[in-house]
Length: 273
Image 1: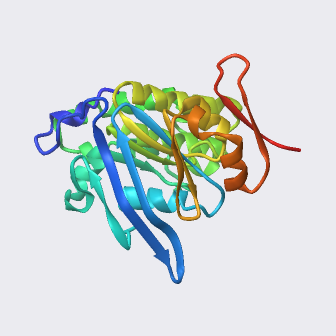
Image 2: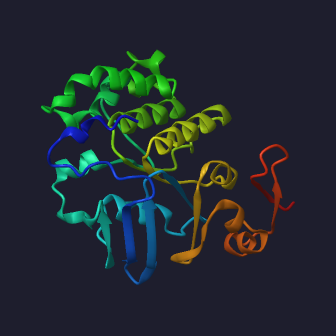
């Protein structure tokens, strides 16, 4: 990741690996009488991939909405690059973090290239706009949608559309990525490709929060796993420490076994049948 736009005078310099890019402190969210999140704390550091996991209704997407600024918490606060997230101008936020929603939708027959080019909008009329075409091409190639360049996105399969949406996020060239279920519509090859591409960005100094349902993907690719349950954080830490059969059986209300992968040693979570 080149983080080309960091030449802009109104942006902080890229955060060093290990520094906190995004912080949620005591975040609470209510929907009517129901508590969705209650006192959730989360730090995301440069050079780290954080996987958010948990059962349906645990609050994963709600927490991501709070982190992106799309949802104001009832309690608590979110800090982006060292200051309250809502104090950054919108155009600066768009250069600091990129968001992939759970169901990215395009209702017009734009081509795949046109959709990915939308990711470059925050850099319009800046010095780095000269790199737009190269960045669009590189990001489309990275997620294997370059052959779809001239296709209408309305004609694409669910998996193809998801990868085009990811390419748009990557083209935004931010140091923070917030991705809600980026692998949901993908086959095995493209699941692994997606997480490898995100890991490449993380290896270049980005921070990433990824909502995942597949605990095996979380174990294989995340530096830290945060398990949400009952509106709070049930556990957080390295995958091998967090993905334990007792905890997961309780959280998911289904007995599971956890065994080491025969080649990598990373945890494999298997529902007991």
